[in-house]
Length: 103
Image (cartoon, rainbow, N blue to C red; front, side, top):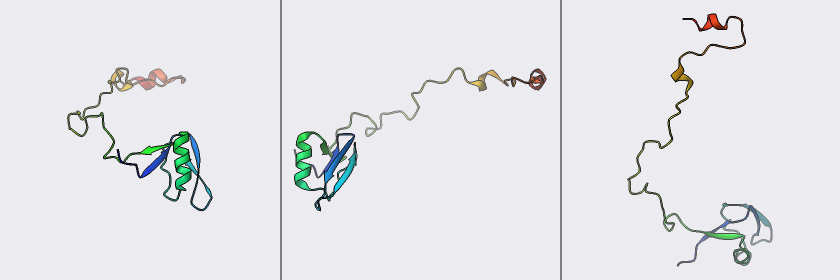
């Protein structure tokens, strides 16, 4: 397996030293900037604060979108209690509520 070119934070917040000695704030899932000190990146990888960020072409996909077999139709169930299915709804809290509901 090839060594990854980029890394990302595995912790909620990781402080990474750059090549000039300044600390960079890298939040979980964010890529480590290229200006990061290689020795600090190596240390943070070993300690589990960073992880390899593989390029999109190297990641394995478990979804079937690439093969085109996924339907474009939504799998979300229909809302069977929609107010639109019940017709007009009378306003409440006013004395004329019953009159307002009459066509």
